[in-house]
Image (cartoon, rainbow, N blue to C red):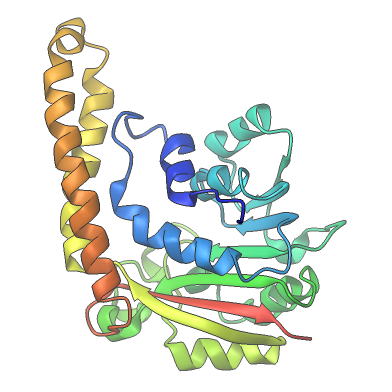
Length: 272
């Protein structure tokens, strides 16, 4: 009845993170992508998206197959992100901070994954004011940020901003759900739903699948490994299948448990 595009399949197929082997995608992302897809379904239309702090563009690549066009913002030069410009004609990249950039259009969906905690408190009002300005009523904003109930305050974490190399590295503040909801209401956003993710099971498996994928990419240059690897790959893909199923099961089971998950997800709709 409705046009279906499985965002998780698109994510696995088009993920461009060249640290990893393309034969072994990050199968722990299924629950995350599902929530992003649920947020997208709340948009009034799927014309364009904005990915703030896009990094390598790993989310943008999947979104470009769901939206007609998209824009990514990244503070620092990123070759992987710029490479996407040569592949996708419906994609644009802006380097810098959103407060300093100009836009000719407004966005139906705005993604802020692992960004909120990196914003200095003094810059937060100007950032959110700009976000609100570039989104029309009916647009949807997705926020993924550390859960302080599990992670504790940013000032006590190993990634606190004072320990980074610059003012925009590390974390400035970990916001609880009430704080995020209150601040977003100031900028005319209404919370539609929220949840939690990145529990112990997912993070246990992530260490292994990342290690396997990185090593496969490194060893694939070895001719002996290329000859011997088909059986190894077959076995690992079976392992990855079970990781996908198990990780997804526990992520869904604990989606609303704020005591056992690293990250908080808030989905907001522009109401004025």
